[in-house]
Image (cartoon, rainbow, N blue to C red; front, side, top):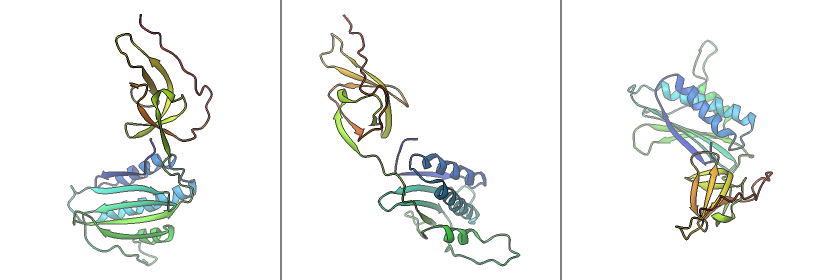
Length: 221
């Protein structure tokens, strides 16, 4: 999955949605450098927030909105779950014979801080929790260069994502006065652009064998 600062999705009001939310959390954990301990705690918190939202008495066709975001400047992973119900979420201390009611107690124990706020639509609320994650990775910085200077192994910003250049070659046709570069990326189709087009590349990419190797395509006669 390409690096980004948040993901927003909606889930149906069914029990399997808790697992889906956890799976999406795991999907971004690697890109964001979330440690295993924090990931385990975030998984518990997100599960409780989604479970609570599913229990809110609202029509069954109302979806639950989930947002997972990283705030690297604050060293925080933020989890948000919105539902169409009213009420105020409060931490309870259930008796020993009660089987439920401990969800927010767990959230309160694991989260750096948490709270709730009205949804922008005016219907329902969003319950959020933030977990301290000092090693969370920020969005990679980039610098703008001409396409012809890009090297294999670098990561480029294309179609709104950071993709790795697996290979590339230059093209020039007699019927076309402009030179072109074709980038072979790790996801999606190849990208053919003019050699002097600006591309944003990730600063200081990790070294790879074969960096800087150009493979010139045969020119048409």
